[in-house]
Length: 455
Image 1: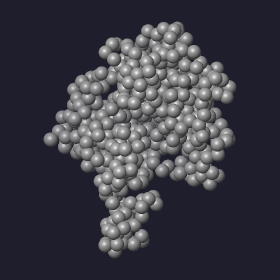
Image 2: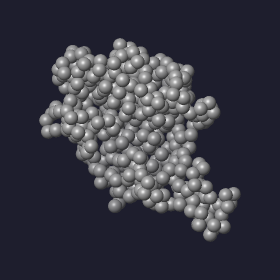
Image 3: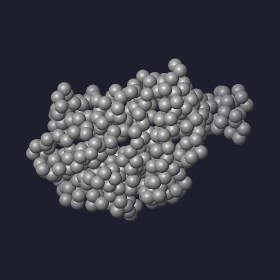
Image 4: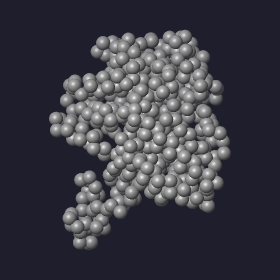
């Protein structure tokens, strides 16, 4: 077990000095006796941060219990502040694809940081990353960087509205496009309805022009629709693949009425391959939003698309966008390093590992007599518990057994496997998940499945 005290991990003071002194610890000889626990540190977080977390799902509310606090990570592994090791299937919700602390990423970040961390001026590196994205995703004739996937989707909506001169936006039940008001809509009772605020704090007016429709069904559009925004492979309601004809139908319907088709590839972009979901599935959008992988694990977002639409953005056009940290030199350095290593051979290997993950989970559940479905699309893996069919829409996805998932989550955690603390998140593998790690994971998943079957 890795334990450190008298200063904790990564230069963050996590120890209780009184404990260290009582135990006779020094920085050179500390045995970890003074390390504060996960619970103690979470209590401190609760006093400083609403809910103790900076992203709501991390609070474990949907699975119960209290979160572990990560102190460091390497490859496929993370360690909490108490020194416990976990095989990590979160991988920063897909942002980490080469493995935690990959030497090429850390070297790129360290080198870039020596030249300054932010300038408020253009840099050659952001230009090179834009070229790298456009080279791999031909639909992105122009690329604009920002700071998150949420900013990317909100900018794409504003851009589509400014370009078309229309207001209405169509989204799909179960797709998640970040924490932007116009996209935080929930459907009403109809098959295709104007949205209702999906959270407190969003006024009805913010979603009055948002239409929410079922995933995997092509809606009939009219000339009031500015944009249709969709996850080409839905990875926020577990993992739901598009049915044949769905994306093609959206493309045709947008063309028919002159609406902008936006693919939200914040998760699938550079995760399903160099060209993303659009290349894999053979459907070309007008705009694409990116995040996660293109920052090498650092905060970043981007919108790319047709030149005539993209040049509606300021300073060339009337649709405003700006950001002090947009095109940040550290994030673009990490992104360039990551994209440079993601070759076709790497994607083929990642897909093999994703299939192995799906196979070992299916075997573990089958041996334990637990009803489950483990869908896979490329390098993405999903999980549904229960005896239903593999979901094709949000209503079907919500039939997963959330109570059983919570038990599985904690059983896996007890075995040293970290999954996202929510029943509707995808599972992620990366280059750190080699066969040695996956062999260990198979044994741990089997024990966890037997545990929940016996309880």
